[in-house]
Image 1: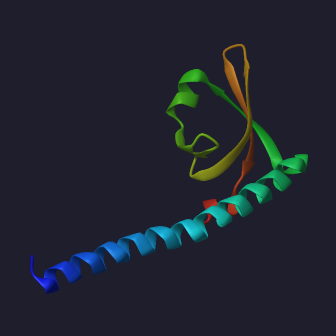
Image 2: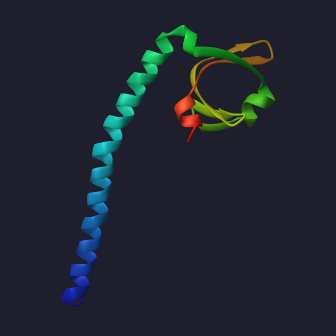
Image 3: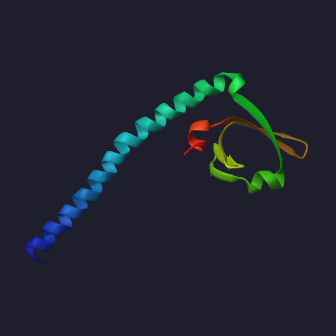
Length: 101
């Protein structure tokens, strides 16, 4: 392998690793801040609503992750999930900031 080719490979490898490290440095603290903000929001009951779904409706929801979903074009953060008979009741927070993006 020629010296310029080796240099290019090392430079590319450095760039990829640097980006991964930089992403980790900024992503994890941000995630922690968002989680603590969400916990504060959940403490105030007036921010929460209950939405009832049947099991097929619940399974058909567009889930962003296990604690967030999109319903009728709006993003919701899930505080709790309860099953009552054939209904699934989600206690959620309407994430207005994320829905406006």
